[in-house]
Length: 212
Image (tube, rainbow, N blue to C red; front, side):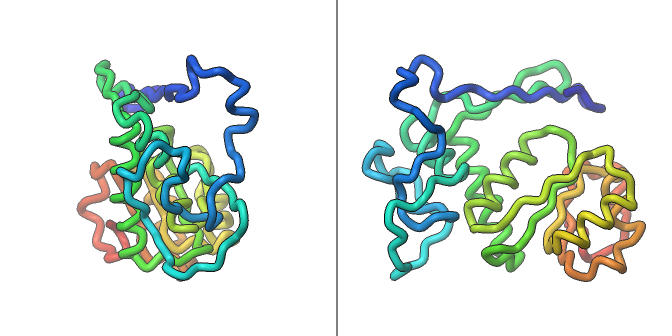
């Protein structure tokens, strides 16, 4: 997908070259504590990557379920230098290894925790395809939140409905266009505590404490 900066993102297949019979399903029930990042399983190849969220004394859930966040952690543990995704920015490919992706996920997850995002809270994402979309999604899952994705072409009325109906508490608005769609009826969305943006042009001069 090409945008103002000619951004294009591709994702590597971590299972390439593996015997497909070893992976009948990408998401398999093998870890405890579902819907959170638990300590690496015995089959994950080590414990070099720490978990984002731990709950000492949490009740066992039997076999549990893997989440997309736990899969990222496992690939970072077993194949840290393998390329997870590439971003084409102004004609130059930038590579992200699985270790890079997991470290960024940890940073984002701790940032969400600092914003008081609780298990079950909604984090909405209104953006074109870009690494930050994936990182914030992984981070939200890692702390047991729920990701709400919006199409970048959604008009302001639809954005208001989706944010209101989902009860989002943290909103990611990529640039001025998406921030303005939220601002148009921001006073009717009191649950949103913070709005994150990554493209500062046109937004940095806005005077709103909710913007971050």
